[in-house]
Image (cartoon, rainbow, N blue to C red):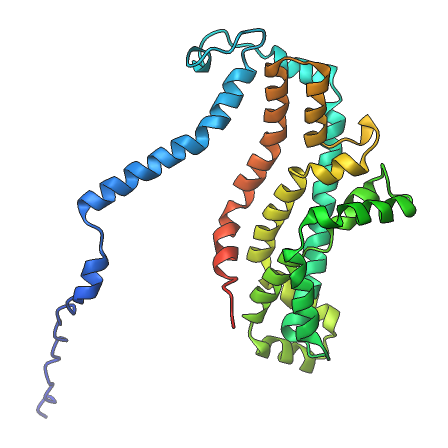
Length: 299
């Protein structure tokens, strides 16, 4: 028997990559443009970082007259006496605890409530949904100072002055958080929710098992923003807190000015207040870009 004839396998022809269009090449920056861009970005980064650098360096030089630029040299006359005075002589640990309670409880409550509201506005059908949503979103255009006095009168009437719940409760209705959650959840496929309902899952179970796990990027992003808002909040804690024991860090550090404490001590307190939010951002920064890019405004 003659062996079967085999056809040689022809190798696929390598095709050259299509040339770039002229408009695409026009958008590419030149080498000189890249250098100029990096120079401008470097200058902007230095200008943004300089106040924090000055705050840290001057906090390490207690009892010295501030003379620029000599006082900004970091390796001369370094002392941690200001930090020892802040941590021992002032009630900064108590203020730090109050700020942590205020920020962390508010973050958990705002994220949970805004996720619930965002899921309802994005995937549920009920009468007046659009009117209710845009009316709630209109709260963003109302300045906080306009509602400050009525809010304080209301909290004072129900006994919320100088209490944790009086400090936290008025900040839980966050229209911006609800809007971002609604925009993100709108992009989730409806087939997931329909399949869960066919399997017999209730709405709250769908929310816990499907919505929340898929919303981790936007939840992390919102968590950072809400944490920063409450950590740096000054006006409402100043009004609602009457005793030194209920001060937050921003109010407590501001009260040091009335005690004629040295500048280095105030700056040391500011560094202590800055450190937690800096580390919180480092922990959750990888979720920020995902959450921001995933909440594009849809029509």
